[in-house]
Length: 499
Image (cartoon, rainbow, N blue to C red; front, side, top):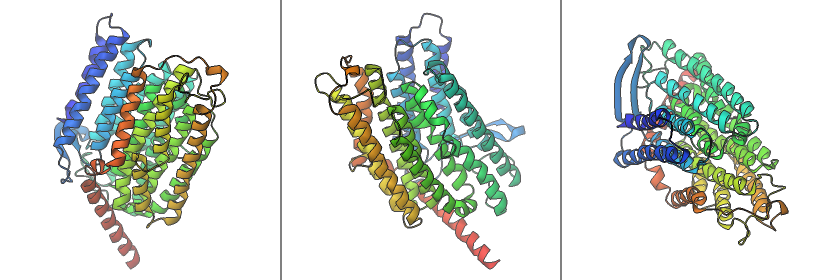
């Protein structure tokens, strides 16, 4: 069942890519949307059949692959990965639907998006360290090409920078994975049989350092963040949706699955430093966002800050805070995708994203009243206004983290206030007041431009009102992870005190 989530997009990519000449952009988009839709519906069916009470991997698949390397094709899904699978399916459909029918080389473009989706899905499903790494690397080249070919004026620079940073991330992750298996005496890379908890603390810290930096580049955390604003600004709107909505979550997912879960003793030792690192990322990202004039760059820097909340929650490692990490990954994916879509519509119709140029877009007669209203909803969700999914995810993180790290939590809460500041600047300058002379004659905004944003806005409100529908998938898995973390940390502290 799980392999279908990977094979369906791959099949769609192959059909579109190898179809004889004559398939135009509209047909290519339609075929890609069909295959992405099938994968999304299949992920929803899996979610319906998923048993939240079980903490083990469900729908597991195993196939021996390369015995000499200890590599096996092992898939499984639990409460940590399931919400991200559904999110990936939804945002892939939205990215394809939002793509321009007139773009050049459409068959190559849609094939790359489907290949990207398959790689991300495989990474979330992989229960083998080496298999995860292979899927993690699969998404690298498609995203590089999607930025380098269909990006903006500086697309070559942004794509190359992304490639270098992500390649370095992969090197560090692979080195850490190899060290985990070889030093612990493992015979294969299976997560189920790996026992790195017996390693000396110094060795664990070294391995965890590679994992932290490797996935910290992907998240990204300060100071490894510089590739992200460039990539977002130069990428087309659908690619920014996938980059912020799904691909960054590979980093946070990796920290939880392979950092906290595999090396809990070292994680507990470094946790105070990780909480402080989270504060730096949150405040730096928010401060940089305030200084931006480009709407898209502002949203990009906001992602850096909001991903820092996840690191704070992971460092706290309480049941409530870790539950908040999953909710924050989903809520940030939905909200950032909505904001990038809306900024994309503004740029498409107004021809600019500069706050000094774009003004008065909420004008009911000659502006974009519905787009402006959706933007207000999106920034309210990002700022943590009650009734939106952003509020409940951040509240759960802060409530779970405060008993462990009260000072760091309070400093991160300042970030939510700064979020309101820079998004208020965006809304006030771009949507209120009189229409500026540069955008006085705006083209019509069609329902095809509005529909993806409306879908995301509805989901954001639904999960904001009923967060239990999201949390029910995750709670048992999170409880088991946190109990293991606390047990190992307690034993380690007792052993240290005796020595």
